[in-house]
Image (cartoon, rainbow, N blue to C red; front, side, top):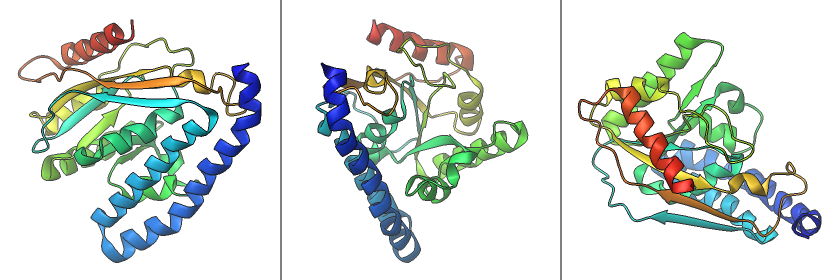
Length: 243
């Protein structure tokens, strides 16, 4: 029944999603060109509020739980499991006061309304996975911006999306690179639950009436702990929250 309703409701959600991308593209351009970073960021935040709201069109729900008293005066590395492209809008909207930036594939900086523009000008890192030197340089630039502005980064350490919700082993590389530049960055795991179910059949039909949850877990102080142990601790916290 949920799949059947998805066939009916999905066109409305998909149209709303792409309309938001088209509408906010010129808005972003005006905000960035005429008013700078702060105005552009507000436009991006509102765009992602609109994007996450399209889930409600198919009867799905977005629950974001953050009971942690996180600081805004130091860099933060948010580590999340990755289940779908829909993981991102709730993270951008609900973590907006932490200036959350993403590490993205350089291919995404071209051809996608709103998203490509934000990736180019929003302050994140756009990496070429075939060029390790370029990737490290981009992540180091992001780390410097985090250090200078007390921004945060959202990293999906699994590397690729999980199509069935099972958490894959976390990779250390990008996190270690940032910590070398920002040794005082706070590590904050985020457990994403069931966003994969909304696209279990692909982008059409979207699975309807899917409750999805994002939960911010207890922070991890880096201290002198080896990077591998820090990342493993974050991974284990996420696994436990999803069990």
